[in-house]
Amino acid sequence: MRTTYREALRTAHREALRRDPRVFLMGEDVGRYGGSYAVSKGLLEEFGPERIRDTPLSESTFVGAGVGAALAGMRPIVEIMTVNFSLLALDQIVNNGALLRHMSGGQVSVPLVIRMATGAGRQVAAQHSHSLEGWYAHIPGIKVLAPATLEDARGMLWSALQDPDPVLLFEHATLYAAEGDLAEGAGAVDIARAAIRRPGRDVSILTYGGTLPKALAAAEALGREGIDAEVIDLRVLRPLDGGAILASVRKTRRAVIVDEGWRSGSLSAEISARIMEGAFYDLDAPVARVCSAETPIPYPRHLEEAALPQPEGIAAAARELIHG
Image (cartoon, rainbow, N blue to C red; front, side, top):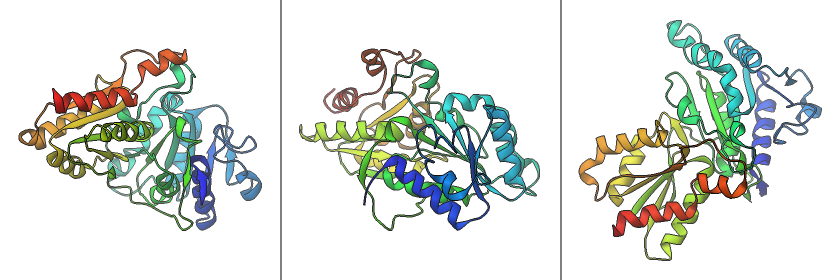
């Protein structure tokens, strides 16, 4: 079945709404407008305003309402337009949703799914180009997912809705129009493990989300030079699949971490530390990182592209590890 990333997400919503009457979607413009990225287009007409709810422009309010609905036994899906707007609901996400099961001694749970667009590459300037998923991956009590493929866009939502704790889905905005083939029977997927997207023996390229296509492009370019790169799609940023990361690095003995977040205090820094702690003596070269430039993301396209990880930079980092 030929489809797009956004259509795979829409199918996942439709299936969840049909399967479980407790599931509903709410957020800014998810109803009559069909979603800021057209993910929920047509769902209001199909399921009605009780289950596809347009909200006021107040993230703290509707995320808080999602926490309350989850506590009351519903299975809410909350859409936040872009990751920067989630900062307006940090108290609801970090202090309430993430902690209530722990603080109540397991008496209550918060089965809430929060979806949001993340990342740069669309010329929407600095405020709408953040990659803050690494911040959320720091917080115990939540799961952080980054679907990068059609299969994960289609299958992660239902798995997330079964989790007793809040699950955050970070959908890279450049992927919504990505097109490919998806099996007719595609359904729920595992949300616990990383995935090998390209096996290799010479260097491990570890990445997730919107940089996965760039990592695969870099691996193809390296392959033409005789360098066999393995590409690991982390998929789950909290909890990280440390076993998959270390197994790949122990095999290839080299690692390049690609992270659209800024280098300082980034998710790539955490992954690098885990490799050094768990596979230091297996390495033939220091761990390399390819991250966004330490600057607010520029608006002009040529500067935006220069600030972000690109296939050429990823390939260059891998070459440096192998050839010195």
